[in-house]
Length: 328
Ligand SMILES: Cc1cc2nc3c(=O)[nH]c(=O)nc-3n(C[C@H](O)[C@H](O)[C@H](O)COP(=O)(O)OP(=O)(O)OC[C@H]3O[C@@H](n4cnc5c(N)ncnc54)[C@H](O)[C@@H]3O)c2cc1C
Image (cartoon, rainbow, N blue to C red):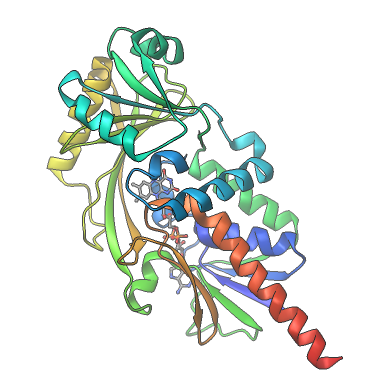
């Protein structure tokens, strides 16, 4: 039984990895000429199930814990287990209390504890929340590693793939085409997320920092070599056109509120990704005429892709067992 995964974003790569691990013959068809060039390219890479509970359901938290565990087992060298630090300006303390009330597995931290966690933020914030059990990764590095593992495991990749001109026979297709599936899956919509990369050699952060604000919340995710990913807006539109001036200004103003040295940083990249989402913002495995679809990853693609991939693998394993029983 050959399984074709359509789309090599995070949903497709993780699903391919899980199926390969369970002994399925897998082939990946990608419309672009690289892996991970879609929405996944712009992600922060936060694996933050407890923080996400602030705006998501308990199911997201539980599936997220499953995802975090998968990442730690699958790519241990890529996972940075330093937790998440949530901060707010003194005038926005109500935001911090609200965040604490909606989440769990955190501890309140004072100015000394904040300085111990992040020395460069010493003296800048008096109160925060620390989620020690969370982690983050660099999405572009992680997708490259998954791709390499898949190639080494014998998974065939067909790039620049056009299904209209390059039809192949196979047993089952798993649609992991992210926002492209908006055209075919009823109820799927796009949520625009704008982000940017700054280079700031004189600031060091160890973990994702979220600055709460009633109108312009911000997160900063540290990368290697003085790079920081800043995000992200949530705009109801399937529009991946360039970042808006207002969004860019707001993200930069908030970054300077975290640390004024970001004012001297260089903007090295701006980007926009469209998050595919259903009305309840919950991802799903859906039956399609050709097989299955992993759809609606919304703002949790990295966090939740492993749990969805496990659901796909379990369904296919069951089908395989049923097929073997019939032919016996
Ligand atoms: C700014 C921003 C920050 C984010 N931060 C986080 C975060 O910190 N943590 C987290 O968990 N999530 C985060 N997300 C969400 C995450 O990025 C998405 O949920 C995820 O990328 C969706 O992945 P996907 O594989 O479904 O789609 P995509 O990454 O878009 O992949 C779909 C792939 O399918 C290909 N394709 C399309 N049509 C076809 C076709 N017909 N045939 C073959 N291939 C096709 C595309 O070229 C693409 O490569 C963020 C998103 C944004 C925009």
